[in-house]
Image (cartoon, rainbow, N blue to C red; front, side, top):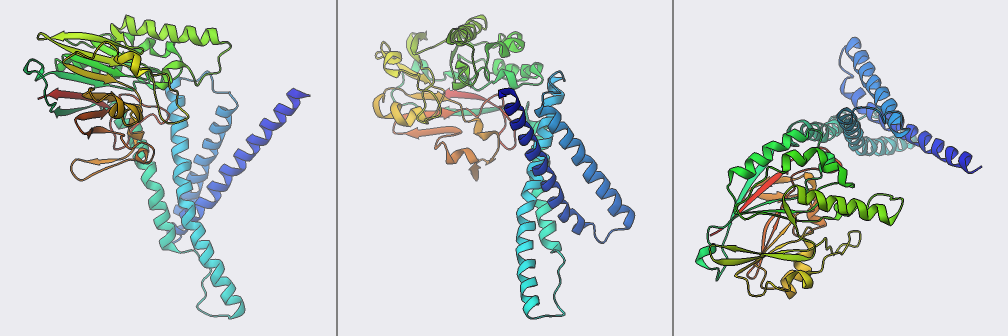
Length: 417
């Protein structure tokens, strides 16, 4: 009985999905129909055949994917096709509001004509609204598709110079590379990450910091990248912390023991990479006769949906007398919540997590915008408050959407001047 109920529920969901997709297709086609109205019969016929043939293929793919029939397909092909189908329906969905506005106007005109007939009444759709709707829908169709095939591996080096008052002369010129949010399980072409490693090593950095989210869910995701990431070098070492995805919190584990084993394995991979993983602890590194305190906390967020494992009090204990204090904390909300209020000796905090939403507009000196700024006040780049600074890395990898638009994957070089 239980199995029957479950199967019936799944059937209803599938039926609802099919009806929803067909409804979007039929409604969006009205705009295409208006635009092609003045073309020849053969052109109109072919446009209709191509439009609905593609829709049938996309709906068939969606049904096969949701039913698990494509589980044996190649990961790369499956991810790209799934993304393209989503982009296509998102684009068509954005056309619908303009058609709906047109329908409201047409209905209003019809009511007026019913009570007061007029020869000027025209029940046909507005060509302008149909064209404008298609134009708006084409923006995500083109940009998001371009972001998948062009931007996912366009690693960008961002250089930032910072001035720290009172820093010893021996530490001036210190070069720090930061990377974050690799999300190993999302890379379709792991070998492409070699480009980022080449950029990192070309800077001859003193320190390299990785600020969390090495994987999406499970430790084994990083295995294909181990031969690549192990090549990252720094004069005084590579230091890392955990991000919210690294704990396996988004997986249904059979037991707490298996979840813990997964986390332990991930920590072991950090060791195999030659990275010094800081889990609510610190390292003191001597550079040119001066001490740099590198502090690392586990994930700590002010947002309820993300964990608070970080214990900065424990991590900070023992670095009080160091000449420069640097903090690695995955979530940037930690900075304004605790760092600038209680730990004013920390000069720079390094964070990631936001990815810059993988979508936005950045023109230096003119505009910096992304939807993520409505969730995180500090979401990309350098921020200052008093004598303290925060740098939020835009992420090296991607999650969910396998690409980027406007916010490219980032390698950060910070030089203390």
